[in-house]
Image (tube, rainbow, N blue to C red; front, side):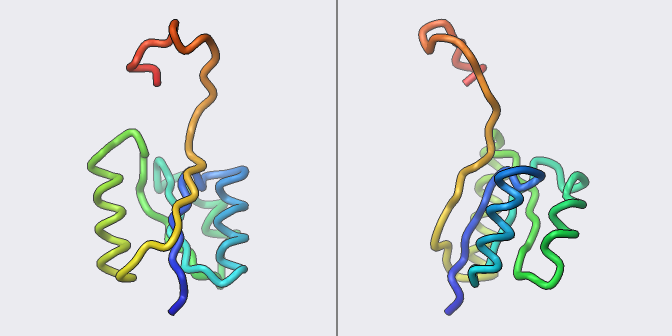
Length: 101
């Protein structure tokens, strides 16, 4: 059975390239996008590949849970998670408010 991977932060850059590379390597890829309307580059780059864009803002628990349910429903398994989504945050941990993290 073809292995399934979820890659977060696939709107551009490393996330997009990782999703494409995983699909080319034979994985069935769910590609997380914070906003599905921004996924044009992903859709163009993944033509002919097993890549499914999914709405996934990793800061939203309901979206995380929904995507996992979708994957398990459609594929029956999730073999790998590549958590690429994030933002840069500078400063000392002691000075960063929990809401910023």
